[in-house]
Length: 374
Image (cartoon, rainbow, N blue to C red; front, top):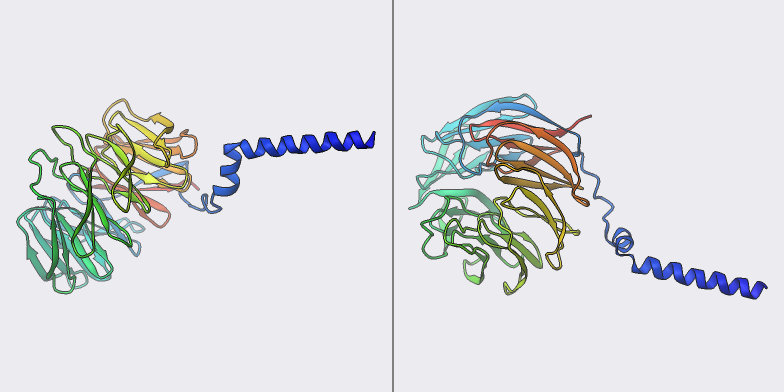
């Protein structure tokens, strides 16, 4: 009797072990779920608070954050420093030239690019010009400083690497003739150990060496109008990209080979973690795609009107903002809507993260903070 009982217990144990081994969710939870996924202090329910106003800003404006302060330029050429805690602003300088690129601040030095194609280096403390350099086309998107070099992108699809000390040019990379049908926006740059990745107005994505050489180019855009790839690539060994009118793709970082692609267009930058790729499409949906094959994990419509210009992954939550001012917070695992705030203003900005808050700015310059309710 005891022998038979032992056999039954042994068989039950094997069945339970087999069931656990075949459960994808269980394996993901035990082996892949990072311990620090929920450490973010920013989570729903959220509170949106008005901070200040800096007048009209450019298309896809982006606040720059450093040491608890925010920096932004507007279409009148004024550059402001914002103190979110005090809800105050101070004008650093008036360039009298429209600014559509996000500024960059390094300690007490600010770099700003204008739509007249002038790059300025400014002393914040003394509110004085240090140097400037002129280019043939508007400076767009944002200015980057990486490993001692300054990077700008101009509207003619050129990336220029400069020495930040004297603004001398180190190298220039040209993607050829810029598309006449471009919507006046350029991609952000993804920096990696082996090179930089960015998109261009013809819908192409390129990997460029730190000497300015092309390593590979892959097409993501597909269409006759507004086909530019103006979002920032994401990834490391696999690079995830998207375009305004075309595809969302996963590329091999070494040679640009397309590993998978989906007919999904987007105005917002990709977000990713070990579970998936998060993106907003042109139909007002937010999607989570499988990293390995691009298949849809979940899909949630957050608006029937307008478009989604910004998404941000914070811990286990995806924050999405529509151009009509609807802020939606979704559970990143299941796609469930956790909170909605109606701001009823016009947005085309990107999210800026600083501390335990997100910051957004309307087209007419109203700055808001997004924080968790206590």
